[in-house]
Length: 201
Image 1 (cartoon, helix red, strand yellow):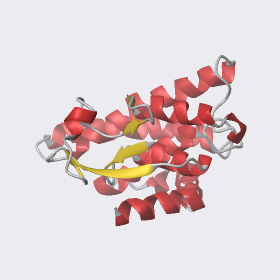
Image 2: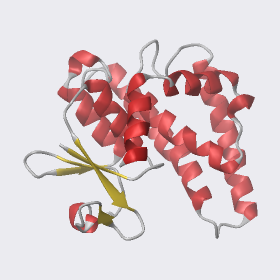
Image 3: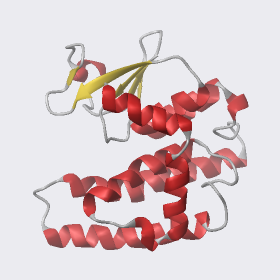
């Protein structure tokens, strides 16, 4: 498998999951501006959407969209229990959480990278994020991870996008349980290895 990534993007999430599962993979860096891979290929020919993450399988198929990729990976090694079994009520809850992270946290933070965005709009987005982070605080004050006592694919995704708050002066100390969660997740060997590999690539 090949994981196409760019540093400080949501591709960190499947990267962490690959390392949690101990699956063999090749890491291929993508330049988000030129849309060229590190080995000189046109990334748009690999993923016409033009953004990471993209996972290229041995048969040549390419899977995109982080929440789909992490569930696919988790199902390759179900004994690792990074995702509940397909068809279970718990799996539906996972999909619910992945959608919440994608539509409320990821989509709430991503526009803030746009320097042309008016400050008034940024303020509105940050105010909405404050409310969403309050919901996460309630959950993480009661349990170690998003779906209970065990780290899973939703945690890899949330950790990835919440790292972006540092770029926008959103101090997670306001939410002690969230801040502790980020510290504990960031201390995982697989997370440190993924971040180190991306810094070197």
